[in-house]
Length: 160
Image (tube, rainbow, N blue to C red; front, side, top):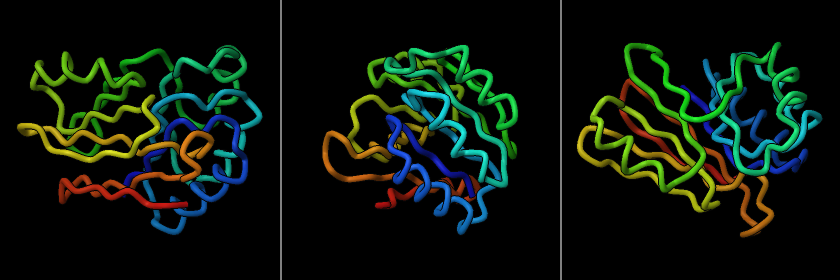
């Protein structure tokens, strides 16, 4: 199982709930699609028992501090972050408007994106697109994350 979150925007309570969800689901990897915001929020991810792969979002201003916080977690970098895991190809970006160009390449089993704060899971061609919504819940009042079963090519949005 893979945990997916985004747009957590320093909401420590929501981040802790996401960490608990991911630990209970025995996630082997967690993906953050941007807007952690501050290093103190990233440190909450240290409670995970798996690596974290993340990209910067438009509100991640303290990039050097975030890079330091992620040294013990996994990695954070500018989007897109492309990697293979469990025989599947992943692309993580923050901005939703980038998705169309990445889809056109036809290389990815999963494209994880964010920025809209609206949860979405849809299949387009052979690619599963996942926006976990806003973990922080500041805009909609709804804190969400996603769980991905890469073997089954299925994901679900989970309220926190």
